[in-house]
Length: 430
Image (cartoon, rainbow, N blue to C red; front, side, top):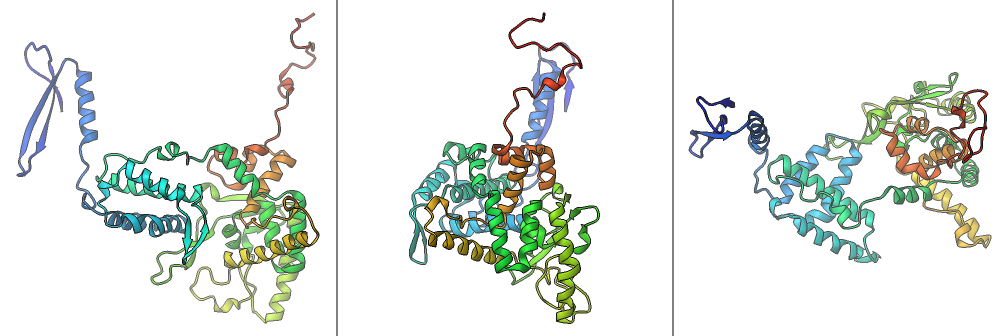
């Protein structure tokens, strides 16, 4: 507490407080200052540095104990986040640091470990798959170390995160330009998309509406698989995104169980516009194709999901994801189509860079959606952000900025008054 002392003093203001001693008693402390501002600043700093309660875990805990705390905390969030940290912990960090006291894992130790990982080959089942780990893998390990440090800070093991900005020091920080270039490789061109859709119609026609929806709306794959028929408003030409499939870590003994949860962020709840072509195909899927399947299987009702596996709706039970597609099955179908397209180009004798790429995944349709809108449709960045459900326009710009149209040199001419005299630049008015 800050007070002013009695009498004439060179330093009249004092900050007075009590420290608890090891034996449980309190000892009064006093420090004097020339001004009240200095005393107030000292009190603020003292309060900030004071430990807030007892540590949640033993400060001498091992990395394994802190890792278990991290897993417990991330399981309360999205399934993919928990899976990301658990994978890095189990595959890379715990095999090396399991028994280390967390407080002994310092910045230099982690730096040396990451440098070794960058040069080490990727070995699985005794076979060398790659000569070295990818930078994205090492970046994920560093992100997991930083998350471990955050848990250690809250548990009063570290005073601060010792791994802050270590990625920049190691050259692992992903720059916006590098991110845009990587995303650009994941987006289909319009001819590639047209050819892919034609191949799907021939090889897996039942999934054709799903792939078109991904390409025309930019939805994430598990957002699309959690769509219900009631989310569609074909007359208005809109689609409401309110949920997605996520890993459910609360089911004992079933690490791969799924459940229905909210989208990735609060901004993920959104209304997406349907193109006329997509609305027409979805209407035919709802009114014709689904009705035929209902009659063929003898179901009393059609499934509530927009896209579903051929399973009797009466057998869904209490499983919140019963009847929905598994994203791994969609990926498998997509890989088959891409392989057929690639092999056709090989047989045709096309050069390597002209063959249909095989690296595309369902998430690539999200990048395709944004790239075509910005490069061909020239839609405002804010509109694309809202359709994708991004939290900030900076994320949209950093990811898809390379597709933004070039700056118009005369773009601000519209600001001139009507009827104003036009003059060339560099000359005075006449």
